[in-house]
Image 1 (cartoon, one colour):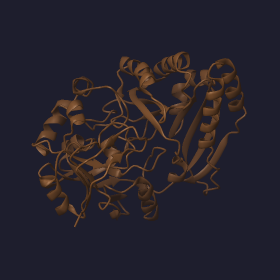
Image 2 (tube, rainbow, N blue to C red):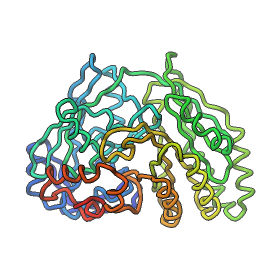
Image 3 (spheres, helix red, strand yellow):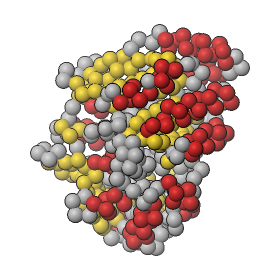
Length: 428
């Protein structure tokens, strides 16, 4: 039988909280169907809590699909793997590697579950690499009446395109089949560059590697450029993680020198200019993943790639002019275009710009100030990160939004999965 409890739930950063009537942990698809049909609504689904929007919040039922996890099957010839949707990425990487497979790309956090990552269009970086949902071959989902449906890219490609990014609003995903690649090694390089060089050489720095990204350090005049390329050499020693120590230093300098921006810029810029380049080879997931202990809230928008540098320059100008309290780096990535209807990367190569704010501090003013810049450049927000958009906005920026909503109504005709927040952002 499923474990059912009453408890308060909160996301990773602590900015979203809920007190549902029950948190249910079904053991199998039969129990899952019973809970969907009979549990107090709305029914929402826990991933790992790494979204900053109220996607999970419910006063009814929250589903924990932790029992739907693990590597169910794999094909060494086709490089495919069938995975429980409740599997955390960090666990999946180990399972796939042991089976000789690898995810083609990853972000730098591996705490999300597969279902949560797919539901919110989680991604890594690389103009030739898609987000996780581009690997989908099959999807198994419990609909709003508790019935299991299965969609295959071979036989029902439009259904996979419709549900590939679904916010947990189309049903409860239980199992997926991914197209992977043989396990591989990556050479990761990191170097500090003057910010003006990054802005001038923006396209080439992102295009000239299999995967690349920037971390712009506010009030420094510098950015860290990270690149990842396939390596034939054996894995070496992974350098010690220094990101958390760096954040502590940036926060200390913010606290001490908030009113002396020129000295803050001089000290941080001087320190970054002396940072030794990093260059090592590791197994794919060891190169991609970084530790993230300091909690933050985040806004990320996905813009047409060609306007990325221009938009980034405007965001930095507003940040450094009006928000001396910000010390978290900005993260800039690129993503390949895809065909998934609610994907922020639908039919356009993308530049993603993420801004962060200490979770112990109110991000509202900063996020309100930069969001109009993202909107001006036709940005689409990350579904799991903070934004102010509603269904009316999404209907204008997603060409297949109406089609996706028709599919959603067919899968969940009684709106069992629709919370007040989802009603606001979807056409319900």
